[in-house]
Image (cartoon, rainbow, N blue to C red; front, side, top):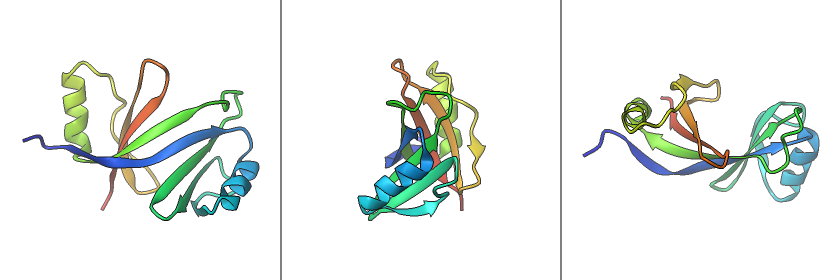
Length: 119
């Protein structure tokens, strides 16, 4: 049995051009800010068990940008296994919002992030 597992999709992150406009839009859909806000560069919004992250991109890459975040258990073991399989993920790191994560980019440019909650 493996020392890591994927528990499910944790969140989807969308690249946005203007954070304030996007926060207002998702609030209108019923989401509430749980991290960040209209003047932040990164915002997490929740509705029930659904999570949408907004990442402000000022470089003109906001159109169509997307990131899939998978909730995992055993992030460091998962990282070692991905490397052994020839995949090149970023090194695992702790984030200020309470997760340890690493990322890979698929052939189409979609970022897949593996995140484990820090205790």
